[in-house]
Length: 198
Length: 263
Image (cartoon, rainbow over all chains, first blue to last red; front, side, top):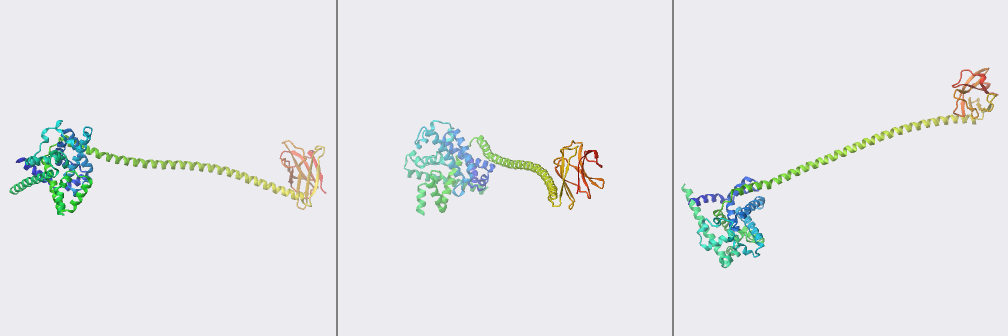
């Protein structure tokens, strides 16, 4: 229980969409950027690892992603979404482009890019395992989220992968997210209660 | 609107938008809806938070060296800008230096050129001045000459002028002098064209005889054929002697070459 509490204290501070920090980064404050990296690099690295299944590639892409964040931070618009979402999209695009480039020579069908990746394992299998609330979900919910969020598939690609109709797949995602939310709010209430008691 | 919301939510459009699966046009449409629809906006914000939490829960710590590399890369990516600026500045200053140097060089060249021009002008002015002086001298000479010639001519052409021929004696058998005397204007003009040329040590000198006394009328110059001599009142005769160069106080009678009595 110690770890989730520790995580939630951390994530509580992260939940604020830190406008001031973003402004500092936009003003090319390297210290603010370093703090931002500390916050998000792990989450983004995890996504990139699960998409590429290659630690070397993932490290390059992670660096590339944060370089882009540094260079393009002026184009971030807080009205359109959270900073994390923005970084996540940058990382995902970079990974997909890199995978398309390398696989274009072998396979032309986009969909096949994500198949049979397990064969060449340049990765600690532990990095591919999911952690936290998602592990408590039913297998199909967990799989659906894993495919679109961690493996970078589109809804259309993912429903084929799971061999269910697109509509069904979409409801999997919705239900999975609803369940995750419930867990998160429960833990949050527990935490708030804990704080109040202290 | 509710129906719209339902369609958007059931189709998982917000999830797909969040995950970056939509194309630019679709993204724009979603963004427009989100900007105007508070319910959907709040639904989307929850989605974002959930996905963010999900990501943070699954974080895998990247190797420490990555951060160090990234931060030094950032410094590198920034420093060229600074360098570029400084180079621009330097090239700007260099450009200014070049312009200043060019101007200075132009000034030097033009100053030198002007100085040379001035020197030339001065030289020319000197020449012009000299020429001018020469011309003035010449003009004066000409004027003087003209004046004397006019005077001579006036005497020669005067109605009262009398002509006397001084014929050479035994000492000067082939020589003669023509003299013109005007008593009213008191002028004497002689034509020495036919006088034999003397050496440099001797000159012809003219004398007037007044009551037995020889009065000096002047040395006859060698460079002119027609010349005026001093008019002496009451002279009875005109006489020419050969004297040492520059003339004599008294005539050397033995060297008398010609004479004529006046009427």
